[in-house]
Length: 225
Image (cartoon, rainbow, N blue to C red):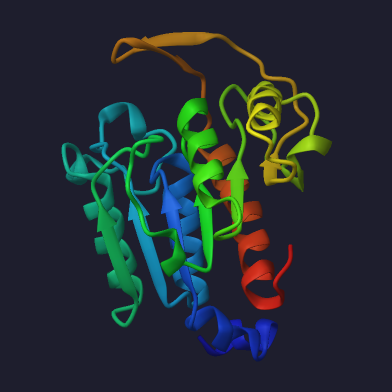
């Protein structure tokens, strides 16, 4: 990690001592977990109930023909340990809901990479006053690798951010760090596993994850984004 230390300085030690929980290990979550592992994060918890499917091959770093049918948390954990054998990785095979029991006090930061709005809001609510959260907004039907960091109440254009603002306001949550795009979504949806799935490009979730990793490392180093 000598090259990382040239950039982060003493912050590299703080990153090595940190614990981060990544909820959702798909397009954005898989990349952000790997970015943090390569930067030297000491402990990463992975939370997801899905398996790797063929439809993931176009955009998820953990999706290979050799990993199809495997649990996403297991595949991602294996990659992280292969990158850094000293890293501590927690594997949690469940989908987070408002009824899920999870000890957030063990973590310095939570990264919300969940697709479902209700679960995103439940996660933010559960973390409120306990642990900082950075939440990723929509990456579907986007073409530009351009994402910004802002408080959720200062975001614009993104339909997912709009829905989040409305629901968070109802819950009395007044602030949330969000990674989002001002690009108007383009394209339609396809039927996939009984739900409507948006279009996606290989590099867009990775771009969002890079911005999320940037914000995460800044927060873990300095206490703020």
